[in-house]
Amino acid sequence: MAEEDSKFEIFLPDGTVYRPEKKEKKPTHYITGYDPDGKSKKMKFSTKTDCDRCGECCRRDTPIILKEDMPLLIEGIISERDIYTIREGESMRSSIDGEIYYTSMELIKIKPIFGTSICFFYDPEEGCTIYERRPYVCRIYECWSQNIPLTGIERLRLTRSDLFGEIDFIKETIKKQEENCSLFRFQDLIEELKKYKSQNTDKIAEMILYDLYLRDWLKEKLSITDDVLPLILGRSLLEIAPFFGLIIEREGENFVIKVLQEDE
Ligand code: SF4
Ligand code: SF4
Picture 1 (cartoon, rainbow, N blue to C red):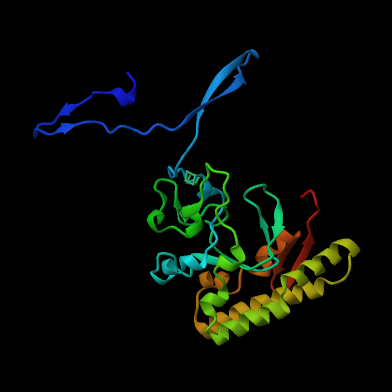
Picture 2 (picture 1 turned 30 degrees about the vertical axis):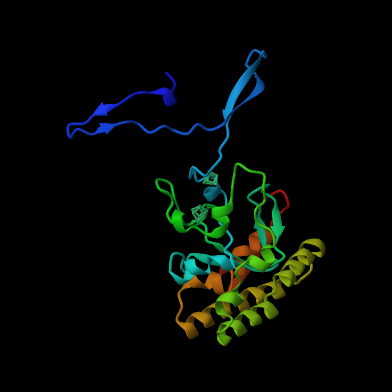
């Protein structure tokens, strides 16, 4: 008997009657496929029409935070420790095609679980731990639809200036970082190093040291912890260097800079 026709009932000791709820059926489609012998046969598949919290998108990437999400930060649903900045010119691996892209604008995102691409708020048992108050891009994302519901990200995105615009000290530190550790300059130096085997490793090391120095300085001046630095200054040059094709190892006060081969 089909599930929606079921008359199944249980009379409970307190006199109430339990009836299983009708489950909504997902739309079923048929395509022509082939069995292992090569004979054509109709194959059934169903599509989603709403979010069943499978978590597939949460394991693939972490969401961008928009101005719209400001109440989540104010109410502490998402804290300054849970988010980080992707600086302009920073390289990111696309969750869609796996290619590396350079961002044309600053973005603030939720941190991934260390060493993975999985969203920090994703729990394998529970799914999204802030589902009712999840960020805007998670709420409007429809994996079952071809629609791209978000346009004008440049205007909608949350920036460090929205968060720290009033704090001169932080504003100045971010400015100093851009002047001395621009990611465009960092990338140019690395390209020159790869192409001409030029002796600009000193300049690369100088940038890395300045970036580290700014972090220590900020920690000391504002008594902030390491986990807030990725929001104020983005990830360190040491961390992101592999995306630009460099492996940098620290040996005491010295750096050993290795260029990754294209096929590594
Ligand atoms: S939106 Fe994400 S969590 Fe919801 S069903 Fe689609 S992939 Fe799963
Ligand atoms: S905030 Fe929640 S819904 Fe959005 S990606 Fe993270 S775990 Fe998934």
